[in-house]
Structure formats: C-alpha cells, structure tokens
Image 1 (cartoon, one colour):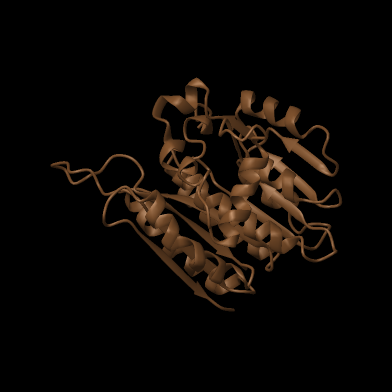
Image 2: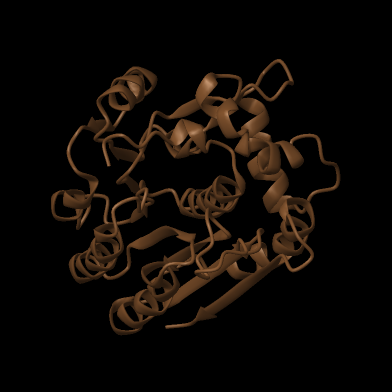
Length: 288
C-alpha cells in the first residue's frame, strides 16, 4: 500500500469520473451559507505533473483528461470540472493535474473545514506544503480509514467523505464497506463518496451491490451509483483480464441534482473516453 503512487495514474478516465462527481458534490455543499467539512481519506499529493516520469510511464492521462482539455461545447457540469483543470494550468497547456485536495482547495470557502489523510511519506510532505496556507485545514499521515471515528459527526453538522483507496490490497474492499457503515451510523446524512476500480475480480464486481445493501438501511437520503466502462477485458485463456476496465462511484446521501447532472455528461464521456465499441455507462439511484 505504501508503494502506491497515484502520479502513475493522474488524469486517467477514473480520475475524470471521480473528480466530476467530487466537483458536483462540493458545488452543491457550497450553496448553503453554513460551513461544511470534507474528509479525504486517501488524499495523495494534491497535484501531479503529467510531464513527469511517473505520469509519462503509461501516459494514462492521454486517454483521460487530455481528451477533454480542449473540447468545446461540453455539458455545464463537465465544463465546470474542466475549468478547474485549466485553472490549475494557467499557461493554457496541460502540464499538471489537480488531485482531490486541489479541487477541494479551489472550491471550498475559508470557513469550510478540510481534513486530508495520506500515509505515503513523500505524498504527505507534498500535500502539507500545498495546503499549508489554507485556513481550517488539517493534513494527517494516519490511515484514512481511521478518520471516520475521529471526524464524524462533524462540528459543522454538514459533512462529505471521500474514500478512494488504491485497492491494491484486497482488504480495502472490506474496509470501504465497513467505513461506509460506520460513517452512516455516526452521521446518517453524511455525503459519502466511494470510488472503486472495475476489475475482473470478485471483490470488485460485488462491491457496488454490497454498498447498496448497506446504504439501503442507513442512508437518510438514499444512494446513487455510477459506473463508466471504457475498456474491454483482455483475451486470456484463464479468463482473467489485466488492468482497469473502468471505474465507479457510489454516493450515499447524494445531492438531489447529481443524477441529472451525470446523465447529461455520461454519453459524452463514453464517446470521448471509450476505448472500444462496447464502452458504456451505468447510472442508477434509490431515493430515501
């Protein structure tokens, strides 16, 4: 887990989906005057160079954010997200990609509380430096899964929680499920955003259904599930494909606006980011 560096994957199709959702949730949270808290359990370094050796190794941003960077006529929610990416690149060239803490930093007000957790020592140091001037912010090098007990219920009463571990250790699947349950037990109206990879693994294929089951019982405002499939399984004799086929986001207590905003954007994301003719999306929700 401590060897994982998100810089290898910065700006890929999964980041596009994850950060589109994050942008819409934070925009919605910011519409009310009362401050809110964002808890980012696996925050990473804050921002990433797509010109650096890590990002250049597989150039995953090339089939992700770069396909949208200069696109015209995007749906408003997608255009808003891309405006943040462009703001992170003031010379007009795609050189840096903003991670979730950077997107939060651009969208949150001074009165809003940011709690960022990152275990990797190098990424933690970078994140501390990046956020050191932001008010109402704490950066911790503790395990983000322990943040729920420490941070919820929030003193602001309004809170959003983002969980996107690497899932390189299979126990992350169970930890995410347990963390969702704990978060909703401690504060049933918390907006919980969970990212997951779409892999040819049993744990990955079952996760969304298990999350739905937990949210059915405890989320005050229901749930939303979105998945974007961009690649087809590799043809191997053992039937096991390599790499991510796509990714998903599960949101407990989603903003009531989120479903329609994503419905407007997903067909275009399939068109722009799909890597085969069968690229597709899933969008489903259950009201409280």
